[in-house]
Length: 360
Ligand code: SF4
View 1 (cartoon, helix red, strand yellow):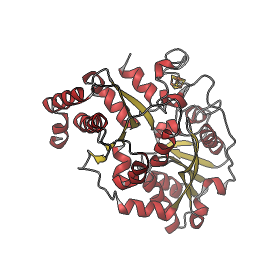
View 2: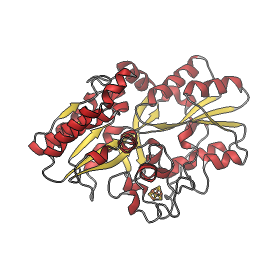
View 3: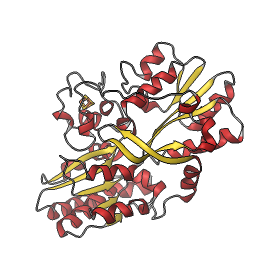
View 4: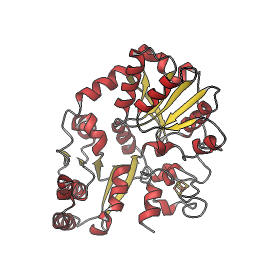
């Protein structure tokens, strides 16, 4: 707690906010890539400390928000297979698929279990040998190693009733896609802390070298985020772009080699479809041939069909900084946290949910 408190120090935060204000003599647009940053920025009132000339825009770093509609439909399909238990983290439960959600399917009697770790899903498989347990693999590099570890454990135990439907996404290719997107102007990136713990600063080096755009990795306490924003505004105002790490107490240049090794052992990169960004080459993970028996898509021949996002939902634009939640005509009318239409209003890391909770 003491270690956390020092990053919530009011004087330090006020000083950083003052430095940021002095730097913002022109309009600046910084994208916080990570959904946890978006929510943390709102929760701590960071925006109220910043000058009007500085815009913080939310990026595609909320895992359930960027999950493609077809993948959400695949989870519904799995939940409806006979003798099957679908295991998932809780944030996926209320995300609307086409005409349903996991929560609704559970209410209809399908066996869908919320788990807190992949090890809980493995325990379910051990306890239910006559049923198939499928884990809904959604998330970025932060969660992928734990899911890879569950596959290695299942492989070691010869567990024949456990598999993963792999819908994982990778952050650096999404940054690349954002740079090619028309209608969005970004002067610097506040890079995700959790993901960077695993992949390290090195993972952004080629992206930075190619685009020479200011990039700073930041943590989630108020001073962490303000330090990151301060470094970005300094680079932008002095036109000296760099790739910096403002979260040194958790993130190294190399990242976590052990987690990377586990991930590489089980997964290989694959093309993936993102809500709002479309298909991005090598931006996802698929399960290697050696572990094909644990790949739910292959085991159950699931071939997701393209599916349209909910009509009128602007999540794709919100996730890519092209509009703000209140710009969506459904915000607060047809779409509220109690009755969400798009994933950005459901997820605890969703931009629309954060706007609704903190910015009304
Ligand atoms: Fe989608 Fe609802 Fe956000 Fe509109 S307000 S973009 S419908 S989640």
